Length: 199
Image 1: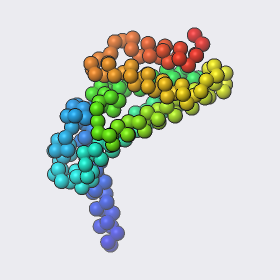
Image 2: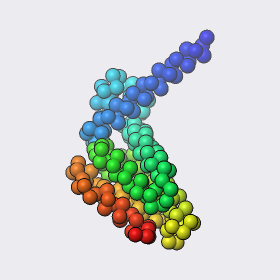
Image 3: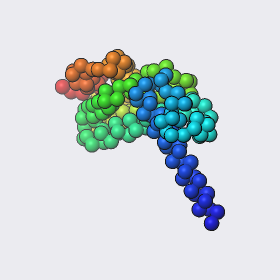
Image 4: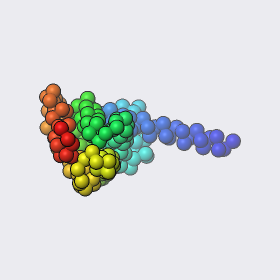
């Protein structure tokens, strides 16, 4: 009988944790990292501030987890979109359309994930996910080189450079909260030229 009680306690704790993360994500999407306090997260989650600290001892711990959660969603969305395409050119178009399109739908959250000044622990998570994007792109570049669609190149170096270029290109539009209609097509053209995609 005791194990059922333990399972219920674990389920309740997990539900509270998920509510905290969801509340923090919602506030960050509206106000960015700087505008997201532990007290505000607790209020939105319907919990006492002390309950938040039981799950996450510091604000940095909480927001490192929030960054992990939000960034993983974005990486997964980009990976799914690219996997639906057959050629390296189409895959990279899907990467840009998905990455930039989703960022522009939620510019405040995307700016927080990409560029807003954050605690060092949170910044470390940002680097982890930049690497995840680079690994994803490198796989498609390597396949494109192997099948002759792309010219010979170092897939890891190319992918790392493209992730940096994409992130930097999006900072201005995200900070302004608006992008011109040619932003995504221009980024796709830039990526294709960088990869050596035949016109």
